[in-house]
Length: 136
Image (cartoon, rainbow, N blue to C red; front, side, top):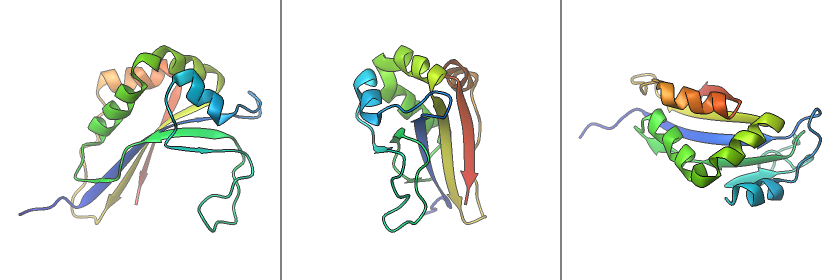
């Protein structure tokens, strides 16, 4: 049985900035009617034993880290979770920093297909989100 040699995980983040001022992550959950998978406030440590601290407030939903997953499917999964709150997510993206992220772990033998369908790119543009890909 052949196993894929990559793992992927996708995230959608909303963070406040100096330009927007602070926004409580709980308020983002209330507006979207969706609990965060992760949230933080300015000054929280990054990681359990980290010494680096967060510089912004943030709210995040994410997929599980999955072996051999198609990154586009994981982004679609997150967009589906926003579902009925899509227009509110787009409004938040205009006042907060929004980001759609992919994390890819590979052993260097195989890589996932990185195809950004027009529909997914249009969603990022509509939400005013940056798209970030990190490979490890």
